[in-house]
Length: 119
Image (cartoon, rainbow, N blue to C red; front, side, top):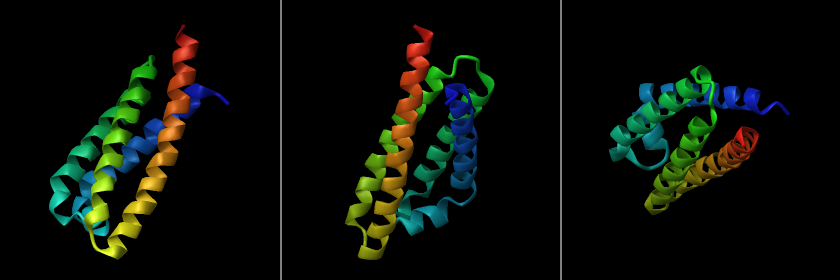
């Protein structure tokens, strides 16, 4: 597996997710039972777009992948708050958290590979 291509793929994914969070924050927040958090969803969207641009445009991709990991932790913490929502929203948040956890594992794998290649 070419880790640089993986980093590029994560960059494209970040931009796509970030644009979605910027364009439809209300729908995303509502689906997760966090209607009052639309500004936070937009802020997370800006973070995703920024890390995506960094991954696609910078030669040294390691710091940008690790920035994604930090963002993933923030996402998971926010999704953890959704457990206080009504039951059907909790299920959506649990599915979203599982997806974020999977992407976090991929981000960590990529970050470690990039970090060890730089040594």
